[in-house]
Image 1 (cartoon, rainbow, N blue to C red):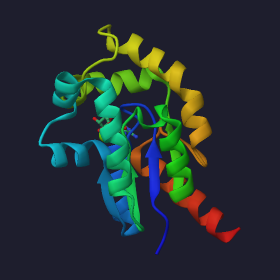
Image 2: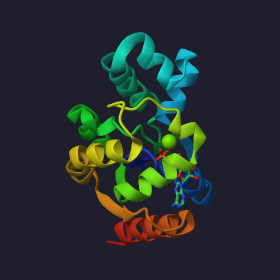
Image 3: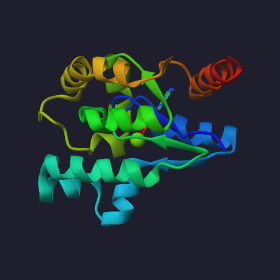
Length: 174
Ligand code: ADP
Ligand code: MG
């Protein structure tokens, strides 16, 4: 049994896409905290935020993090998971935390090309590029500090997975 792998990073960095493929490659289960929340509450993230506000969403997100934590599991986390120091502590204590790092321009281009993501509520109501830039500026340090490892998420999903598997092999060897 191996510790869970938590993937953290801003919206569009590939937590869901890379996470599912990484789980397949390792023979692990895959969980997504946003998807778990949707299944438990019967609501989408945007519906929870609209009905109950961001604060309530954040509280439910912490519960979701605890609920999906299990051995041999890759866990894709919501982009704002690191905003609560409690969540960062929890992830570092319970598993390996990996930051999928990408520049704002790349994240924005991916989100703009992805209709599902583009429908997500913005924090500011401004154009997506501005928002991504601002969110990243505010959160990059949080992601860096929460992570055991930082990987380059600006390459192909296969490249990201290879980098993670190499890092994990090095970690277990030494
Ligand atoms: P997250 O879960 O971190 O918000 P997603 O996995 O949903 O990000 O990816 C957001 C969008 O970017 C999707 O359309 C996905 O196909 C694309 N994407 C994710 N990772 C990569 C990558 N490494 N290279 C190219 N496109 C990617
Ligand atoms: Mg996702």
